[in-house]
Length: 387
Image (cartoon, helix red, strand yellow):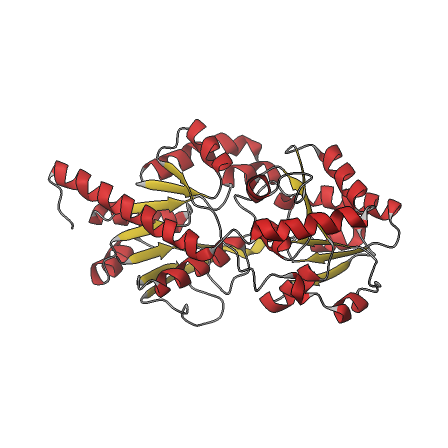
């Protein structure tokens, strides 16, 4: 099989989509599955590593949000590329302009399509004050995904939600984890000293983009409430984004690191004690699994990865999605009980280690083969031949 992945983002971009696609392509390479990539032209010149063939298209940064980009290309350009390097199946990791052009070109060439649901665009409409656009976004997404053979989502919760919205052939593809990269063994006493904490002082950590969709108002309120009951608690915020300056003003005692590399990130996780994650915008949320693998007690909404991986009170704490009062109370109560958050963190790592990237990639390959076989069966029945 030959696979082509179409995405608006790719490693070394720092986000969950880029991380997931990079790990999947690495695993497929190890299984001798050649992978091609179509993506926007990166800011720094260079080709994606471990990729057979690559097409870089015009990049357009979103106004007011320069870290996020979309790709612009004519379907004819994609058809030319795919005639030279025809894939057996195409994976669309974006529903944006690049994904739309790829979907059209693939249909014209009669190439099987599998779509991934990596971003909750309809949720973003609410986060950015354009709620009135959400119904239109849902109609577009339904049309986009129902034009593909399969749609892959990371959780059963998400699959059920999309099926209720009228999207067909939805299947669950979870996310993997590197349990050696993210491990309590990376705890760094010198890093904790830079945070100004002793061995037994608690450290509450947040990792993620600092933007409106991450529910940062609740993060701010929760961190403040935790400090009221534990004045000695250190609070560390890893990440960057348009809301950073405002958050720094509201949490003057917190440590803001900006984006950090993978090695440093593993040390930040392992050197903390609690992970506070109030976001509801994720389709999965790699940071939750990474925190759990690092031995942290997680406080999160019962949503996405947290709903799949956490049994509340056993290996973390979850509260009903959207209940901000319950979220804040859970964070406040847990930070006062070291024995509890230590126990939760130990059990959390055991659960996170069950998420093997090798197994996820094997399941991904099975879905690709399923889509390919179904497409060929339909094409044969209709007398359609490849273009």
